[in-house]
Length: 68
Image 1 (cartoon, rainbow, N blue to C red):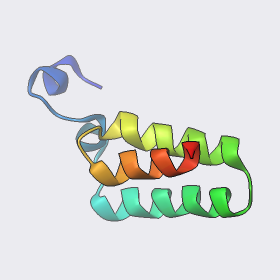
Image 2: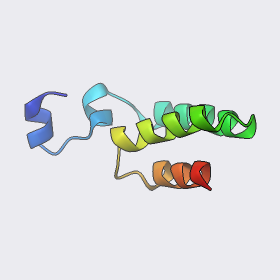
Image 3: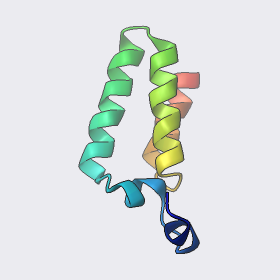
């Protein structure tokens, strides 16, 4: 992440060019991992999404589901 992007208030997702569609596809992978009982994989994916875009409530909901 460029320091200029951080100073401008951009999220990591914005800096990387991650679209909502890409984020949702990645979230879908986490859901599949969760359903398959691979909790550690689901947790890592969910936490990565939160780091990339902490203002997206869907990412936080996914992480809450993984930790449930």
